[in-house]
Structure formats: structure tokens, C-alpha cells
Image (tube, rainbow, N blue to C red; front, side):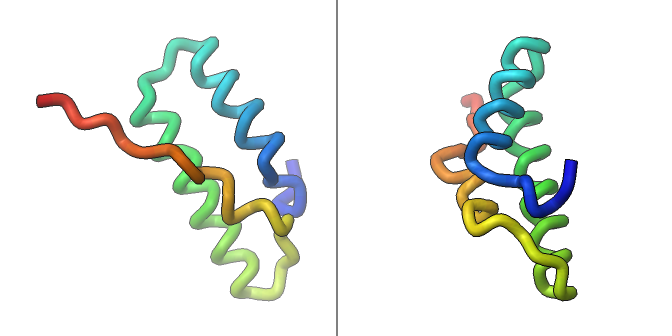
Length: 66
């Protein structure tokens, strides 16, 4: 997997894989946020990223239990 390939499709496929493996929702959100942080760091250092990369966590929020 290359940083340039981190896009909406990657995010959807990754989320489906997480769900199929039985991972907790918050683990999925945290992992995608870390991936986005790594991609942002790469971009800031001159490594090209996919234009959709900034959307990979769009609509994903942590679930808070009361």
C-alpha cells in the first residue's frame, strides 16, 4: 500500500475489514485517524498524497458510552 493510494475506497474497504474482524468501532476510527496523520505528515514533507485522503475519516466519530 502506497500513501498515494489512501483514498475513499481504501477507507471503505478498511472499515469493512475492521467490521468483519469484529474490531470495536472506536478502534477503527482511531486507526484511520492515525493513518490520516501519517499521510498528512508525508504530504507536509513533499510526498504526494491522494486528493481524497482528507476524507478518509469523514463522518466517523468516536462512540461514547454513558
